[in-house]
Length: 396
Image 1: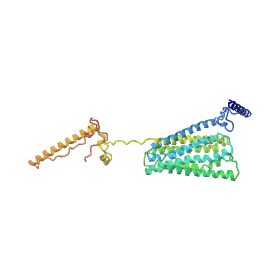
Image 2 (image 1 turned 180 degrees about the horizontal axis):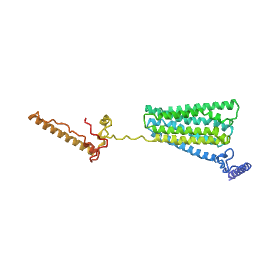
Image 3 (image 1 turned 60 degrees about the vertical axis):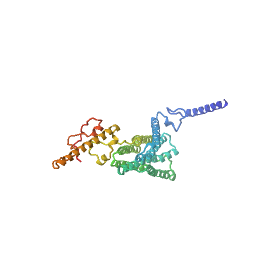
Image 4 (image 1 turned 90 degrees about the vertical axis):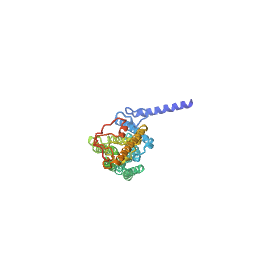
């Protein structure tokens, strides 16, 4: 009891201390106990953009985590090598999307030196991870379309990591030159410098767009749907980048909101890019990878355009029930008996008159459609009608 009384006393003192601090500095509307500066944008209803970005980013984080868990749990069900090779880049893309949504929360906190360093270091790197995944997916689809085989998933993931590491080196050099050598504050940089530091990211996006366009020219039509989704994702990402860079460089200055609207523009760009990659690439690509392969269909025996070798190699006995096989065998024996009788009669007549005896010949079928016994058995006993493409039986 003494411990509980002491704990209640400490909580009361802490609550009064926070109450005094809140009284000295009033909290924004919507912020209750526990959220003070510099975290007031997470709950400030007067600056509604912070609450909206927070909600949308939290939904994106949950969606990306659930999709990654589904892929990892169903990985052993993916039997085709071409589909398994795309799982690694998808998981890396989901990791980059998680980083984009998480980085958007850094723009809902008031700036300080460590936070500005984190923003400048991770902005281009996370975008480079996402766009390099799109690029390797385009290379994979192009390889499948031309050579009907895909590179390994580990090789594609390693290539994406290597391409994104270049942007990490560029961001590190930029921070070393401006912060350590020149002694500037981490939060003092021009918007043009920030945009130029992301030039390599834009080059990755253009390369991914080119790879997606080339993937549409493949020979196989099975993977064309993947290439279309990839092309749409790259096009929308390019439009989004043109929009936010133009607004960040010129729109804020033209509207007179240059320092105030910089953080909202960057946070909205992060969230929009994350959801765009989720909806137009990660979810459709995961659905295609997890979809079971199509079952092989039975050959069409009436289609004369099929390969005759394949038709001869087809086992007709597998499609006929056991009860009908005896009927087919009996018909075969009956036909052989009739032919044997005809041959005997023909040979007997040849002994009396060898010049006028008629030679036995195979029954001739005209261009009128005459179904065979096999066709009637496959059709359930009913006489089928001629198919619309029937132009007469071929004479062998």
